[in-house]
Length: 147
Image 1 (cartoon, rainbow, N blue to C red):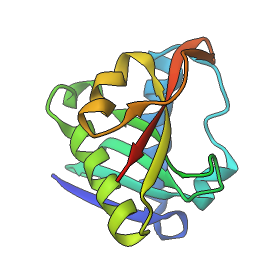
Image 2 (image 1 turned 90 degrees about the vertical axis):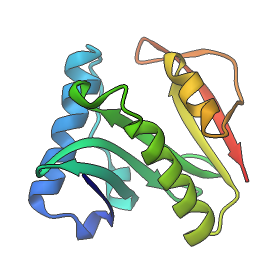
Image 3 (image 1 turned 135 degrees about the vertical axis):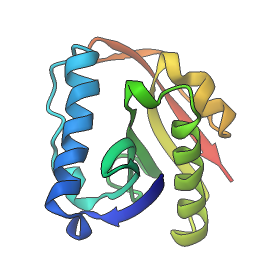
Image 4 (image 1 turned 180 degrees about the vertical axis):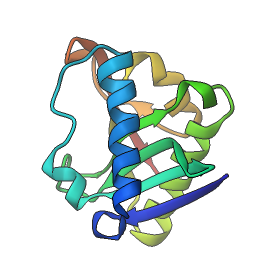
């Protein structure tokens, strides 16, 4: 299994298709959440993902500061059900943190986490930065990483 980090313009059509497919499968179908997943922010994002036999099995996007928050943001974190409980999400988040701190030279990262994933993000160095709020009918909290 290998990981890739690409800007939107660097994605192949197959990679973009697989990214949109995994996000729809998990956020819209599995979580039964009707919302506009495809947004203009994808064009501004870095897309970080793990591939296994040409299938994207874990994915997230990175948005530079000022796009979603005052800080750099991580979002759309997903892992296929068949690959969960193997540490892929945590490894991907850690790779994102390294890219953000080393390459983008940023020290703060903010994200909106589904409440059930709080422990995952805490294990990567994030701390809760808001009260619980509903987003698309799902409990969320903002979390902040400071290097």
